[in-house]
Amino acid sequence: MRILLLHADFIEYQPISKEIQTAEDIPSKSSKKIDEVIVALVAVEKDDDESLTDEVGTELKAYGHMIKCDNLLIYPYAHLSSDLADPSTAQLLLNSIEQKSINLFKTVNRAPFGWTKSFSIKIKGHPLAEQAKTIQRKSDGDGNKSKLELTGESTALKSEEVLKSSWYVQTVEGSFVPLDKYTFEKDSAFSKLADYELSKKRTVVEVPPHVRLMKKLAIADYEPSSDGGNMRYYPKGRLMKSLIETYVTKMIHEYGGIEVETPVMYDSNHPSIHSYFNRFPARQYSIQSDNKHLFLRFAACFGQFLMAKDFQISYKQLPLKLYELTRYSFRREKSGELVGLRRLRAFSMPDCHAFCKDIDQAKEEFVKRFELSLNVLEGLGLSPNDDVDMVIRFTSDFYEQNKEFIKTFASRLRKPILVEMWKERFFYFIVKWEFNFIDSLGKAAALSTDQIDVENGERYKIEFVDSDGEKKYPIILHNSPSGAVERVIFALLEKADRNSSKGMTPALPLWLSHTQVRIIPVASKHIEFGEKVLDELNKNNIRVDIDDRELSVAKKIREAESEWVHFILVIGDKEVDGDELVVRERLSKSQYGISLDNLIGKIKQEISDKPYMPLNLPVYLTKRPLIMV
Image (tube, rainbow, N blue to C red):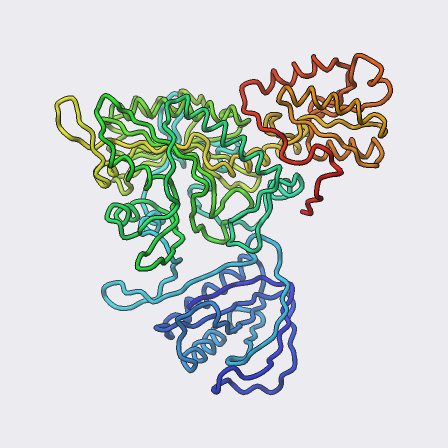
């Protein structure tokens, strides 16, 4: 059974004509309007039976409770499936769902079955307003029972939900304190991270501040014609993503990463990949092509592992570091968890695997990549001390054998770390750490991460020749030093909003700002001089534009500040005839005179070690389209 749940301001529908001969009788064809309602579009499929209806009712009630709506409309909607039940069975089950829902909702309505209907609907704009559910019968080995499941879900994901573990806080000194004995600083991000991890409540019921900011700054927005969690990026957002991608790639190249490119889809029946599904918790997009069942990758692992399998590798070449920035990786995250740039279904992930000869080399490389990740976050504008909190997960066996190694991370980070310890290993890795950014809603989003993988070398038959001449399987590290590019933008916007709430000026790092300098001519006669200033700034790889619109100078300044432009140059007669420019600096909230050369030097000093890309919009504001967000 497939159900699409819509939280609507209203729906108005009217039966037009009978679509099938056995359509139910109705008293009239008049239209009906229902306000503030959950619209449940339902398609009953072959093999569905009465055993599913209780679970459907539970799901409907849970959704109503989550969005605080107590009115329900059950709407037969065959278009959700191509494998429909016969009409008599479908009508019987829809009637049953209606009867069981009467005790669960304040009002319950059902649109007539078997009729062609016209309808108008206005769906609300919050993240939970649209949710898809698939409810199926599944055998447990002893008999049939109904079970809610999302298509494309790995067995590892289901197992992860019930995996037993013990939780601790590791202090800076390296001691372990049971989580329930640790005294958290009240309302700290670290305490919210612990709550988030233990509650496993990933559903979002409020819109976080970065969603408003990504629209206000014309960075990104939802794409209504795509699947949820697939975004559109406006020119400013595309430039920002490109700069982040270039910076992270540069840092990985300096670390020794060898850049490759691999396909975005793979055969799910490939022996190594099929086995991997059961060891990695992720939901996949599935594609049927000819006689192959394909899936869209959710990481760069598959391509890099299959590539490494075909290499001839000596121990002398290890650790071998393969790198790809995937655009895109895909995961079919639950619709209720999708919000803005924090959790997506299509994302750009810098993914660097290191193939190591043994566990000692893997541990040594693990520490190097930890340092790499700290440096990358710092360069992106996120402080490891102030903006992220760390979780580390490992098996008890690994901990007993590597206690001093585990102490390395809290000591280096100089702050406590949340610890999850498994009694036995379930996943392919024995240890994994991640840096998490906690947003204003208390939701954690993983950024940098690394894992020590002890299974996939053998699973993918990746071999190297060791010093004794024997072929062996490598230990593999899985590192993203930044996390998904989109999540970096999410974290920077949330940080800016947090700073604003503390009375600070919200801003993006200068090197990531679309317009670094805006020139505002007082009158049209000053544009020519402004163009000369622009040319000098451009020669020095500083992004600059000119506001040549016929607006007051005050309004132009306000708009530049609302776009978070760091430096504003107002050009009038004094500037044309003099040796100095008057600069309004947004972050310091100051205004001062400075020569053009000194201004260039000041800006270049701040962005000297970061990548540069030219403006990707027309220089003149009158030439730009107005992006409505």
